[in-house]
Image (cartoon, rainbow, N blue to C red; front, side):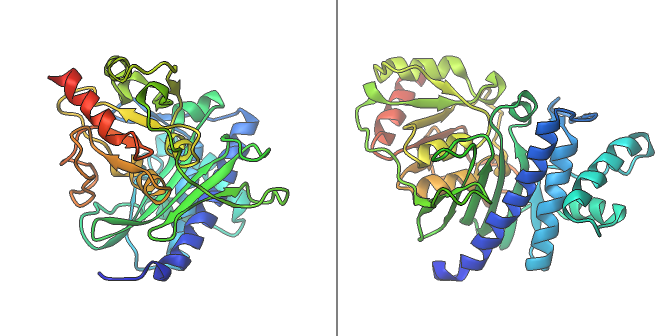
Length: 330
């Protein structure tokens, strides 16, 4: 598909509005500090009422705006349809109804189950309703992440980061349309702050690099990250954040390098953990590859099977970071 970036302005606006709506649901649950029961997935990560509710809100918005577009999402409603989890399902429906009073219980589950696409070619949306659920549960960083992909190219990316301060506001939305740059938007309803263009930092000296990494050791090899820092003679301490809020930090110029070294030879990243964030970095002037310097291949299904790990930088530091990785792996 050949298209000018202007053709995706409507998609960009819908993406921003839908992640904002989902994030408001998450905020409401987080403020109450009553997370309800959580289900546990096969990888032992938790899935909360807010995860399901946020996915329902975004998928409903996408269905209304683009009814023929497939959606790839992290969650499904199979367990919510199990009578053993009726109480959790009732909580999910209740949260969604606070924003969409007319929605039925069956419609909420159907909205969640709309996110069944396996991706590949063509046009589809990719959603992580709460990226960083453990950060969400701790009251720290998380993001609602949504991307539009067309023939393997990320065209639109939006990250709602409710706990990432911007201009005096407690949160922000970082969004990009390919070819149009990255913007940082104030939290919806906060009229004190104006939107701003995002630009990566100009830092080119590895010794001064501000490196961000995941809180969870299972999501990135912290030992390898430390060795990269040592090879770069980096004098700054790494900052650990949950979720694609790390991408937002780099895009705004508040960090310089995001490392996610694989924890095993077999491990591969999920599309929904990287798609939106990769575009906001690139459109802010940065670069994103795997640890071997290869471009991320979003055409292989739900996982980045052709890539290992993630290296995101301000661009000026990318070659040095890749060289450091080659050094520690040799």
